[in-house]
Length: 217
Image 1 (tube, one colour):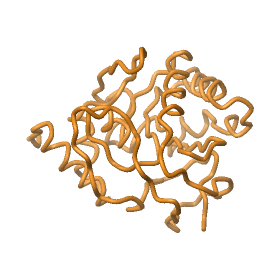
Image 2 (tube, helix red, strand yellow):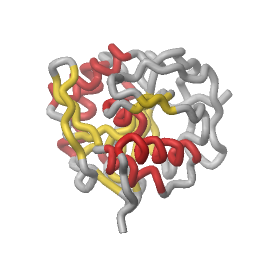
Image 3 (cartoon, helix red, strand yellow):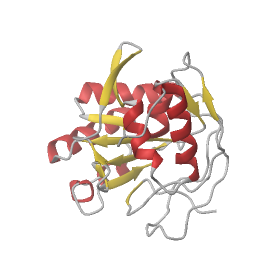
């Protein structure tokens, strides 16, 4: 079984139907306590070296997620949550094992990201592998897998020409006494509806139905 890298640049590093299609629509839910697959495989097209993660947790650890988000806040990181984690804050919760986020594309902000991760995962030398060259380069994304192996982070400064930190519509959610910046339901819908991933199509349909969204134009 291949495993994910602690941190690696990628061209089109996306999951490929690894999790089920079920989306739970419950406006009362504001978290990530969802079951995940215990094993997975990686598409052959991803040209990175897989090194460290050899196990998956049954549940994403909410306390770990909240600890990282608090570290983001304390470090002053400029970020926006996207993907399934952002959907969870809007009450649409589905199985996921990662946190996707945009960050502002500046060397100073990337250093804030490293600082926040060092605070959350003290002593992990792989955090130093997250470089400005990657996040400000042609394929501006990295994947960071912390030592716990319970979740991983896909960090981007832009997603092709579709969206970036600067262009994605976002709102602030108050969670456990802290402010968490998340993409709006409409922004998530726009990012997901036109992709080739079947899971994104399921997510887009759930967002459209839950928030009565309309296609633009």
